[in-house]
Image (cartoon, rainbow, N blue to C red; front, side):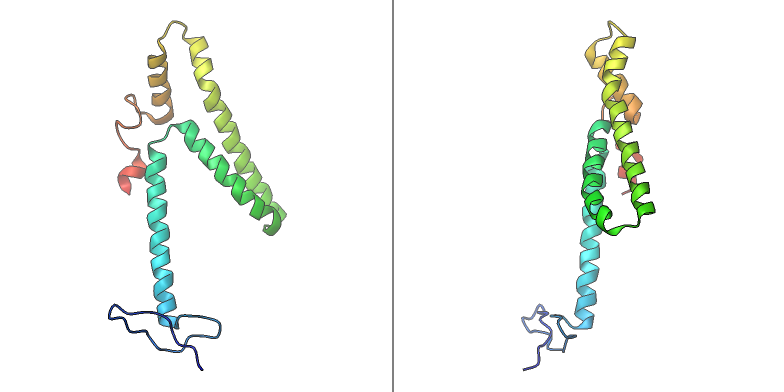
Length: 146
């Protein structure tokens, strides 16, 4: 028995065309499925842009560090040494920025004694994002464009 395309039309009928060996969909429906997965990927990335846009900078950097750590495992095995070295440099830059952000509260508190904590937080938000009222006051440029 020859396998046929497993795509099911809205009417309930299956396609019936012959797919390539080892495939379950014919070339046309495989392209259609690939297009829809690309759209789903782009949708997911847009949601991620909006999620990160409202987070404080320290949480954005922590998220980036976590994702870089996941990618690093793959790069160690697959990437050429020069590419792996560039990736490690990018990771070091993210970790360094995160350390600076984490230390910022303590440094500002020492530099500005007597300033109430809520004012220090407002100053930190202003320095991080240019948002004096906090992340909900105005979305960053990336979120406005999407």
